[in-house]
Image (tube, rainbow, N blue to C red; front, side):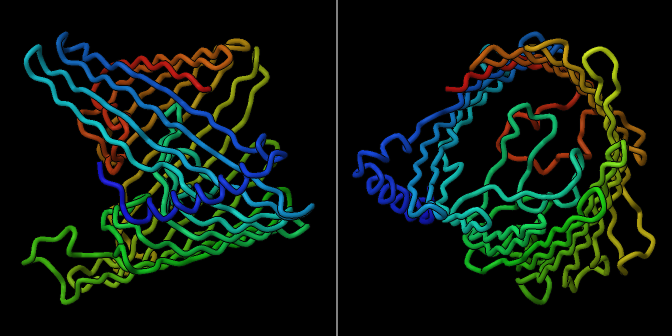
Amino acid sequence: MKLNKEFYIILLMFLSFAFSVKGQSDCMKNIKFKGQLSAWLSPDPANSFQTFTGIRYIPELSAKKELSKKVSIDAEISLNTYGSAFIHSFDNTDFDGNIKPYRMWIRLSSKQFELRAGLQKINFGSATFLRPLMWFDRIDPRDPLQLTDGVYALLARYYFQNNTNIWLWGLYGNDETKGWEMIPSFKKKIEYGGRMQTPVLTGELALTYHHRKADLTKINPEELLSSTDILNENRIGLDGKWDLGIGLWFELSITHQDFDISPLVYRRAINLGADYTFGLGNGLNVMTEFFTYGASEEVFSKAEDLNFSTLSLNYPLGLIDNVSLMLYYDWKNKDWYRFINWNKTYDNWSFYLIGFWNPDEFQIYNNQQDYNYSFFTGTGVQFMVVFNH
């Protein structure tokens, strides 16, 4: 277990704020504690002895204080505590576990403005499965809990009365890869960017930008290093979503890397998607997306693209039961990825039965870390139980 300096700084800020709220008897009701406990079991049908199992608990403490009729301040702190075991045989088991900060932020907000500082989730965009704008999170659509690590950031958002909104952010203290990144950023260098989203016809259109400096010393052997240890990276994104009887959306992300040892300095990712709910029984939702990714010398020059198509079917069997199916097709390697998920919910309890039939090596989500969902390779089944309090 390793907790960095930022953890203790934000923890001290949160405790100071929480105690200031607690000191006022009329604000005691605004201090809340909740948590999520989950456990999973993934037996290997090809090997009766091989099993992956684990348990995770995410406790969350939050506090809120009204500064005036229009302005409030609130804060949240939560931890990701987990342990897992990969049982190869009776006498061969690999154990893993950790306790680390999950969310730690403090926020000043009004009806149209918010300023949030600390370890937080920042995500945006219109796509669902393979998201070109997955820049700061790693939300996996296969994950029933939608878990993702946060980033240390200062985020400001302003919402105009016509639903146009502007985001500005600065990131600092993040030295691990995030989103689709394969090269981590310099921990002590500021990343910055922004986003503007505005209504257009029956939907919305958004433009996003981000700049960072990547640390080449973290990934390359010394003999392959470029003339500098710093890789300047600029990203620009464009996305939109509309309701035209069926839902339609697109996402585009273009990344330029100032890389002097490779001519492939541009990386582009495009997603086109649609969804519709058919009036069959309780309502059958069908969603499909096409995703393409490639690296090239020029922005739109020809490249050996990686192309995926996805299809999702979601059907509620009743008030407490739901079944969903996800299919991915890799056009380059001609591989299918198949997931089926049945879940049942009773008040605070949720139960999941997940089946999967995939290639032994993933071409998607291969940058996921920490969470057990990276074990969805080959053919297998997973049982999961979740308790929220």
